Length: 130
Image 1 (tube, rainbow, N blue to C red):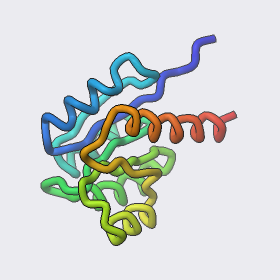
Image 2: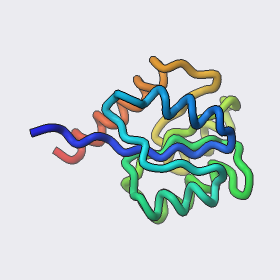
Image 3: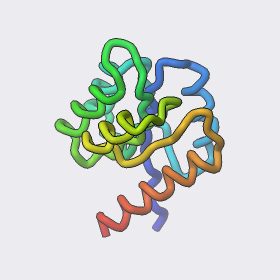
Image 4: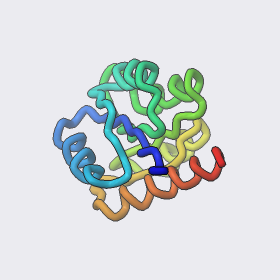
């Protein structure tokens, strides 16, 4: 029986960043099922689509990635959220982890790092469901 592909929502206000992430995930074990340009849209898309993982930019309009992370984890605790940021200062990292982030991808990123981070999270998820 084929293993179910991991579903992902990409939330980033930069169109190019969303395109780059989407391209990195194409052909891998992931299905990008939705995208969002701001924190509020991310919350709405996650509530509607219930993805396995959200790749969430920290700095976004309307609601920051951390604000969206908090709301997503309350409404959908099983959803894994990976913060994507160019700001890796200890306060941002600590606040994200305290609010339920599963990991970090630091910009500028490369495909190997993104895929490694997502693979570790999806492996943990599968082990939890076994």
